Length: 284
Image (cartoon, rainbow, N blue to C red):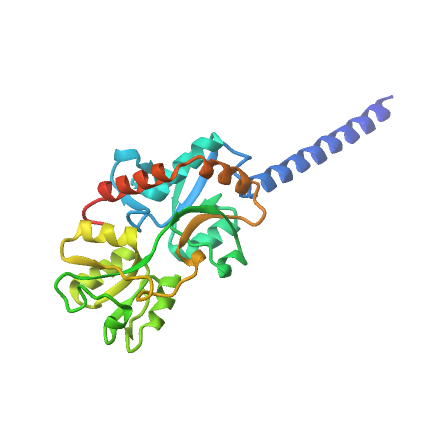
């Protein structure tokens, strides 16, 4: 009887260990799925350096959200859209400040649940990640020094001989090649760096989307925005100028997020953008 009980105890112990191991594996799979459904948080990656879409600030004013592992806060159009999505999912929004080039790797590795960072759903990116429906659409413009010979330009052809740049690894940088005779400069990591380069005279202009340009000219009265008529500006596709939420391939969040986005009216989206432009830090 003693031997039988010892044998049974051993079998039961092994069964418990096997079940515990399976539970541990399932938990790990769930945590790294990027679905956001295994936890009470919705973790979003962004640069927090692309106003008015996203920026970094020192407090929680105007709906700022704490940046994970940081004493600072993130705010902007993307943050407010992310907050609406998190609310719709019934989860707490967590912002992870990430360099532009690190956003897609962070998503595919499961470190974040989504990219909400003014990212366009280009065909190239769709090879690696999925996207939600579009949550904003804009046009390409140029930001120049006020009073420069490029201030008041009406066509991209007017930038012949100009020193022009754009953000690294964006389609903004590729469209510079459409300007004949342009002096294409090395791409820059972020928009704050381009604003500094423009003010110092290192560059004559940088390519941007209209909300960022409006933000730049509002923050610095030495800057001017140059818009173009449809037949005088950059040739772009609809997916280039659209902005959507980046998600893991076949994520079960895609359908849920699309449903939430459909519930945000165009009027509300424009109001969120107007507020973002108004509330951006003056020095950013």
